[in-house]
Image (cartoon, rainbow, N blue to C red; front, side, top):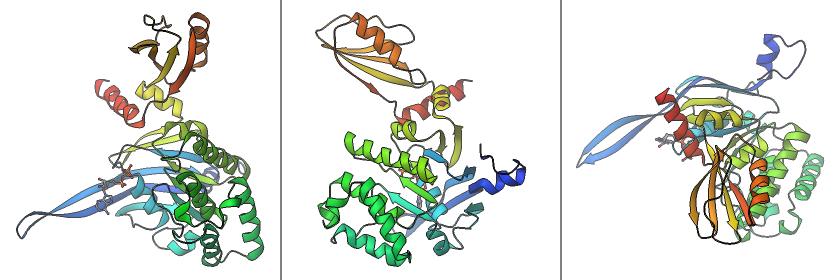
Length: 336
Ligand SMILES: Nc1ncnc2c1ncn2[C@@H]1O[C@H](COP(=O)(O)OP(=O)(O)OP(=O)(O)O)[C@@H](O)[C@H]1O
């Protein structure tokens, strides 16, 4: 998976291409909890447990898992904010915890739920600050700023204080801030959370361009499986700090036998539609019907058949949520 065809494809090439290397990494937090007057209990939380993976240069990988699975802890270790309790970690050959500042020049980070922008200042001021902080050469700064402003449509927003931006505008602003210094790696933590459909599409389109045109290595954490579907050919699932799955999204759906939902709005109330198995009607409410079908299958033939036989007014396809996919994966394993 990490071989991208440099040289003659020897083992050495493969390792050199592993831009992010995580080898049996652990993170244990010491937690102290008050259990009574003057009484405290010490407990250890193993947030990341014997975690190993590599990401090749230019790969865009989805990193998913339920709440508390260890995703943020991993990203914090990859940026050098947290030091691992054990194991080995390298990003671009750098040990993040030891050389955090040197690494900072090569990585960009976007946290969907928090902004790195200056709240009360116009957007452009945060960029000017990044220009100085990262010591970006003037010509490169101008060139990158112009390109990002155009691609992310920020022109009209540069003089607006960040607190006045909508969530989608702020997110685009944050993405630009993370990319001004041309990082080779970008960590994105929930970049589409809370965004409307149009803003989501815009952010995804931009990220696709980043992957295709600039070859930036991206680790993407998200609860939205459509982010993964549209951007990543590979997905890693973490739970309880351990890697549960590493492969294509379709494989994850197969492993979890997950299902998508087709929501049909019919012209009028009708008995449950006759869907070709394994698709089946799971709910009927007035003229609206919900059908479940395997997530690894295309919706197109099912939609075409139903559209030919029934008076459809509207339809939409809903992705399974990550928690459900992972829960099914566990059930499968337990019963195997
Ligand atoms: N600083 C800390 N001190 C103690 N425990 C922590 C700390 N940071 C994280 N944890 C614990 O480690 C585990 C993993 O947390 P982490 O934030 O990495 O999960 P996550 O997958 O990013 O979750 P979410 O999707 O909710 O952001 C959780 O049990 C969490 O409570």
